[in-house]
Image (tube, rainbow, N blue to C red; front, side, top):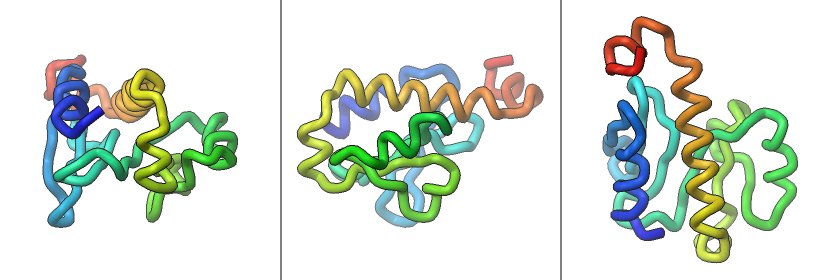
Length: 118
């Protein structure tokens, strides 16, 4: 999945927005809360939130490690661009959608209503 395919996929989710933070990170958000972060020019480095019960298991695979700064909140990152290239786009989309849902489901009801999801 290239950067444009990732953008189209993430922005197809209800209430999703994009923003560039820290100068070079493309952040996809729902209700101003991030659910996926990648490089502004390519999607070889990527982080997203996973369920608590799958975090440790994923971090033990060759593909993922705890994400810098947000690993304690159960965010994972690809270990390298090579690992991202080997990972299935179909499975990646499932994880991104799950990350979106995890973040969306934690939003206050007022915020959901404000962004048209309540």
